[in-house]
Length: 460
Image (tube, rainbow, N blue to C red; front, side, top):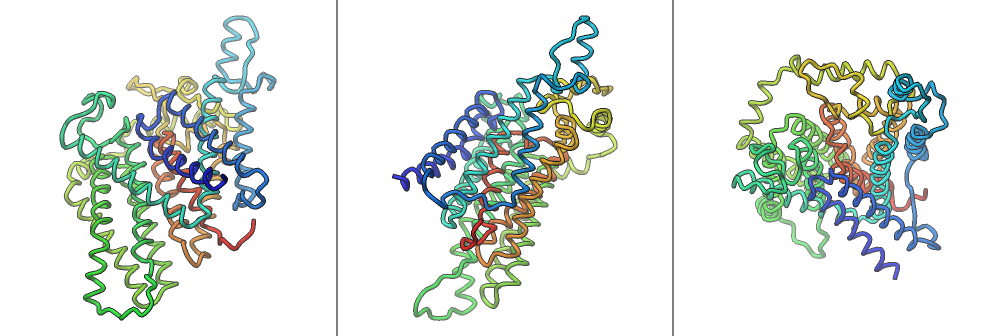
C-alpha cells in the first residue's frame, strides 16, 4: 500500500507543478490558495504513509538552512501579532490613531490578511521543496522529474508560439489586450513566462545531457569508428535538440530583456559546470561525447536566437538605464528601508505600505518593487530578509558542493546552481519569483538538486 501511495503522491506532485502555470501562473487568489491546499494535502498524506517507517524521511540539509527559513517565517508571525510595542507598529496605524484620537489595535504589518496570505504562499513553496527533497533521493525519480519538466516546458512553449504566430489570443488570456506581440504562453506577463521557460530549459538541457552522455553498457560490444559514433549521436540527439530549439525560440520571442539575460547566465553556468565536471572525471570517448552534447546545445540555441532575436535586440539597444523609472522606485524603497531597517512594514503589504514613499513624477503607483530582494527587505526588515536570503544561498551552496563531490548524477545539483543564478539575477529587475507557478517550479528543481547533492550511501 505504501508503494502505491508513494507513486500516487509522486505523480500528483508532478501534476501540481506542471499545471500550476495554466491559470495565469496561479497568480490569482483561488489558484494560489488551491496550490497551497494541494501541497499541504500531499505533504500530510506523505507523512501519514511514512509514519512508522524508519529512515523514510531525510532532510539531507545543513540544519542552519531550515533554521534560517524558520526564523524568517517566525518574524512574519510576530509582525501580525497584536501585543508588540506601539513604537513598533506600522506608521499608518499611528497616523490613524492621531486622526481618530483613539489608540487602534496596531501591528507591525499594515494588513494581517495580506501578511498571512504571503506567508501561506511561502510555506506552500517550502512544502513542495520538502516533497521534492524526499522523492528526489531516488535517481530514477530525479530523472523522471527533469524529464516531466522538459516536456512541460516544451508544451507551454508550443502553446505560446501557436498563439503568437496565429494571432488567436484566448479570451481567458485577456485576448489581444495584454502584450499581443510577445510570447507569454499561459502567463499574464512575458517576464514571468521567460523565467518559467528558462527554468524548464535548464531542466531540459540537463536531462538531455544526462541521457546523451550516459554510457551504454553492452556485453561483447564491437568498438565503433568516429563516423559511426557521430551518426549514432545525431540519431539520438535530433529530437531533444528540436525541443531545445522550440523552447529557446519561445524564450527569445517573449522579448523579455531581463528574462533572456538571466536565462543566458543560467545556461552558461550550467554548461560550464557540465563541461568542467566532465573534463575532470571522464576520459576518452566519454569526455568527447559530453563535450559534443554541450556544443550541440549551444549551436541549436544560437540558431534559435539568430532567427528570432530582432525585436529583442532592438529592445536591448534602446535600453537606457538612466531613464528607467524603476531606478527612482529603488531609491524610494531604499529610503523606506533606511527609515525602518529592523522591523519592516509587513510581509506581503508592499502595494499599500509603499504609498507613504511613492513619489514618482509619472503618477503611476508601483504595487511591486520590480526587485524582489529590495521588496523583501522593505516588507520583512533587513535582519529577517537576510535570514531568508541566507537560507536560499545555503541551498545553492549545497548544490555547488554536490557538483564537486558527487561521482555520478552531479548534473542535478549543477542545474540547482544554474537555476539559482537565473532566478537570483532576474529578481534584481523583476518579480517573477513572486509568481506562484515560478516559485513552485524553482522549489521542485531545488528539492531534487539538493537531494542529489548527497550520495545515496550517506546518512543524515
